[in-house]
Length: 612
Image (cartoon, rainbow, N blue to C red; front, side, top):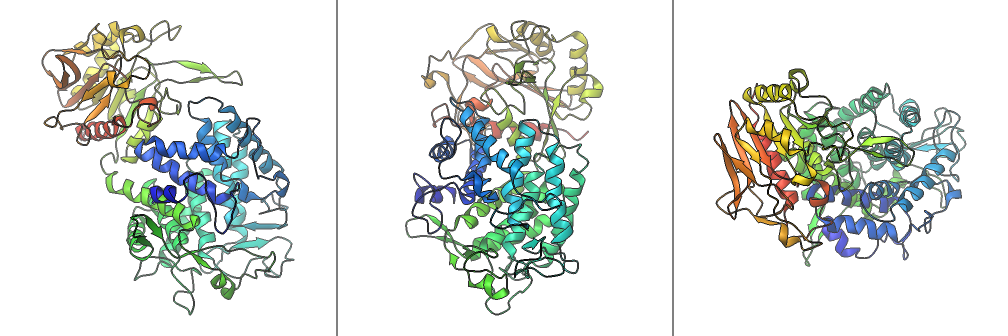
């Protein structure tokens, strides 16, 4: 679906009946969908599409073409999520994305509000909170707050949801009205409650997506986090109740079933599928709601998706728009919601369909890592870098680092396989390793990299050896000898019949990537089931003695080693080759399959875990 969308919107994203491109929430929605595809495939073309689109708007000073700050239109915030993605990648001139994101943050800071602090939907819609606005503003606000250290703002984010729960939720059905007008002045507003008259499915969909996406960034220890989870817990059974029994989908006016004129609507259905699937995967709601999502997705494929004569996919039955007030006046009646045109390949349907599709793919495979924890060492690899504000943060082969130096993408593969990823910040004691199933040690520091490096000591070796013997899965990733503290690392490796040699090979000059090529033979697919060609440069080959065995040998050099030790497994390689730079599809030739190799290896390692 993403490829079909990109084929139809080759150079830029044209929304609806517009004849010119503009900074728009539908664009933001689609760029987020494409980012999800990039993270799932490691194919650089998706990243390039996002960057090229955003670069048509954002100038070097951070100003945004077609964006009008003074409109105070919360619909202008969603493309900000793409700005944050671009800013977190290794690339030149990325400061402009931060400046543009700062501008959107400034809009939120100055956005007119209700008396209790709820954002007005737009300056020209005074005193009104719309459900759509929660999706428009809050996922961006949450990621920006986390990224640029504004912990105080999470209370404000939680308050936006709390106000909807307080004023827009119907006490009888649990459904949520499209909007409420604090002033009670709008013709559509109930004079007593201020609520709009009907339950529009897509409005509730925007709210549901906003909840599960905001929780990605909401601090685990924040007291309001539990409240957000309670809201999705409250909403999930309501969505299940109004799911059409026959098709598994949801109606345009959600509570009116097959009343004359009502119809099964694509965008809302896909939003509910995504929210229920992701909510159950993340443990916010009962796991049984994954079945509702699965039934809904089967219905969406059957009812909405069409293969065109040219081979491209289309999505049918998305309502083009739904609003309140304005000119001509939209009164929020049942008849109004049915009067808006239905559009084929509307972006508000395609984006959520991609969101939902990805969740369904993850659901198919995340049993592999369920209940398992992958720990990444931050003790022996303990490098820091200075931030613009003067603070220091850990970087280089960390889960959090999204730059080319980090392991964020490989960590995301583990998470999508159902595992939990954690940092092991202290020495590997029995206590620190007790809840770890896979323990990864990468490139221990030399004195050049860290002024006070933590070298691997005999007591560390003893603790790790015992942990492996009891069933732990250890991954040892060295580096070329100039960049890794090999001596002490080899003392650990020796325990399992492995040594990192002093030889360096696959020395790559500039962009001559073929010099880093390694082939996985067709008869050697035990680990790399889907991979044939990988890239590892400047690596240290292995020297093996029993019980260690080669998992890949090239030109007489052992590249990958496995040691079965007690109940456990050790996997060794002489380079940290699965960091972002070589799996995200942006740097090396597309013929290399490092992303696929990272997924194959992650799945294999998780399967080596024994039940303790």
